[in-house]
Length: 178
Image (tube, rainbow, N blue to C red; front, top):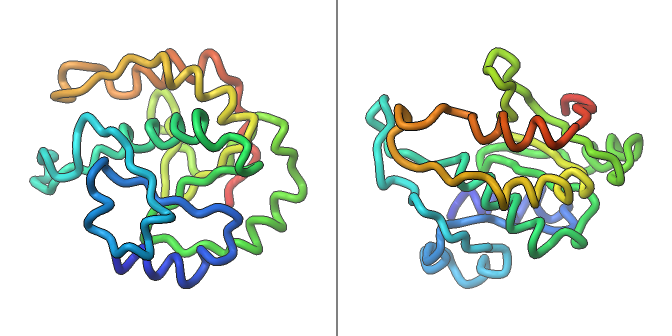
């Protein structure tokens, strides 16, 4: 809640649209004044309901990210020209991002952020990623049709659905790193 308040009171004020994605039912954990920013996702796995190899509670980040992008596709595609995924411990200079984006068209399939090329397939990662509306428009149907694999990592190939369903069908131009 403290991180959310910090974002709302600082760089979040400069965003045209600001949303925080939480597990269904978790909005009760936040003060009422923040409810207008919250979107509850129907997560199959919930934060902290398992433990990673390091013994720390799992966050199920990939499920949250694809559900977030799918929610935007189904509910908010026309709300903005650009969509970001920003970690709650990241500070964003919103004016700089908006100025940088003047050089690009949201009508093209563009992704900006960090890519892990040492992973096969290459994976989108990092505290800040940005997608054009056209990218979300094309990505949405792919995410809808992806297999929803859950359970022990050994039971499915990490990134298999991303490799097969996203990379092959969607030609995203990686425009730059912000």
